[in-house]
Length: 391
Image (cartoon, rainbow, N blue to C red):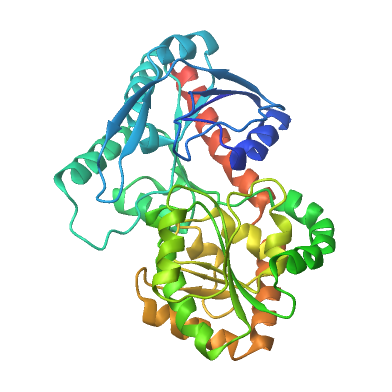
């Protein structure tokens, strides 16, 4: 079965998935992707080895459909030609994240009679009324979704969205968003061996560490964590805050830490390769804003998680009270209360961390992820074969 992926770029955290698809016994895999969007997270990985891929000429379209930031959409004028040339049995597309390309793709696959799997997080709950542009965006997304034959979600939250939209149950699939947990586990021994040296270098020997890992941008709400840490630090002198990540927002966060008198906050800058030891140094991972992939990586390292709204995977990976907590975004009082309770009970932190590891080992990991992804592709491929026979 030939599968073509249409993805804005091929980011480093998705490369293991694409490599596994290329190695899957009955799949011939090709990835179509665009150019980097400088100054954003929309960047191709430096190493794209292990699978066939084609970089398409990319036009960049800017649209402000959120109140927080501009969204950059790619447009690949040559996409129809590439689809005609490849003639895949199934196309896997990331959906609304690449809206202009999605219109081109759905029109072309309709003409060529190629089934499409729509890969999406569904809809993130929005606390405020949607603007006109946001409502229009969602209307267009649903218009395109209905022309696909299968729906692959990042989480059970995405499945709830599919249900609300009325998509058939058999066309719905969920691959809970996660990193390559096998690779993380394979590197964990080395990460643990390096942890003491890292603690010494960062001045964290004998300290308890709240850990944040992710891009430093306003929608991550790291200010909420810094504020809560400043309050907790007054009651827990041995507490430290470790912020692992880079971005244009770092200077703002450093200034804010000074403003609220948050002492001993360590900013490491961006870390991609070799991030494992930082997870081993942390005691609790805290994600106060949008995020997702760091959750599964921290759980593989045996950390409890305190998070707010992520990409939906928190609904599956975090079992409330068992290995962490999912809180309302922006509720700093609740965040402080949950962290205070954890700090007061070190044994509970350990039990939660053990539960995190068990969830990764037995319930949600890169292997279950791949099985569900491939099931969606096979479902679409079988529908395509059936339609060809009927013709």
